[in-house]
Amino acid sequence: MPTIVVDVMPKSELLDPQGKAVSGAFARLGVTDFSDVRIGKRFELTVDGEVTDEVLAAAEKIAGDVLSNSVIEDVVGIEVVE
Amino acid sequence: MSVRIGVITWPGSLDDRDAQRAVRLAGAEPVALWHGSHDLEGVDALVLPGGFSYGDYLRSGAIAALSPIMAEVKDAAAKGMPVLGICNGFQMLVEAHLLPGGLIRNDHQHFVRRDQKLTVANSDTAWTNTFKTGQEIVIPLKNGEGGYIADDETLDRLEGEGLVAFRYAGVNPNGSLRDIAGVTNEAGNVVGLMPHPEHATEPGFGPDTSAAMRSGIDGLGFFASAIAAVARVAA
Image 1 (cartoon, rainbow over the protein chains, first blue to last red):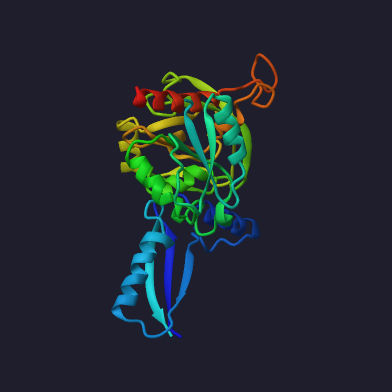
Image 2 (image 1 turned 120 degrees about the horizontal axis):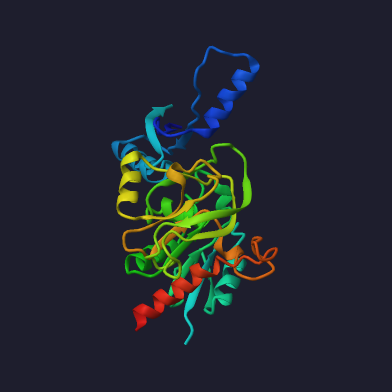
């Protein structure tokens, strides 16, 4: 069954406390290759049937209205995977 | 006839009973409302209490902001009814776009609980009119996701238009931008804040003051303000 994957990230200009905490753990491990970590969310929307333009439009709408809050987050990807 | 203030309960609400008690102590009649209903039962004002609705999955308050009764809350807010969101209720109000900004995990990652000093930044709202602008009050704070954020443009607008209702004083407990603890809408009827006024409404159960332990009742002014605002509209 096709799945629509929606990726949501905290806005780049805003603080991401979770990413900062993970970044701090890297430092404690002595890992110095990565200067920053940001944590986002991946949603997998299962579609019963074909992914039509209407279904994709519905996914885009729900991604903006519910899955993300545009004040603090950006939808960075909407992708159909089989 | 006494003013009737509705307190909406969600699954996971913790402070609904405390909010009802605060309403009663302030001299109004508390009305218990249910998130799954579409009936505000003719109340004069609304409190969205604190707690953890729907496990705070997705984002704090996000799923609760989609519950049935929120349609009526939005209508009532648009018509000028006083609406107060406390903690999780504040998160619901920003998720419902009734208030600007957003709330994220505390910058230090820890849950914080303390008696918090606030400065009243706008005393011209339905929930702050018994205070004076610049007045300092102390009420409890307890949250894990209380960091208030918005983009610089929004923050400038909030400050320019006097929409910051409360600022953290002394200590910024959660990394909120520009020390913002609570905000109001343009009309001044919808107010949200992270700290808990309902926990500072009865001597013996509030924050410590210089006068006596647990004697702080600064939270009572929020509910007295709403009663005054409703009376003013009725007059």
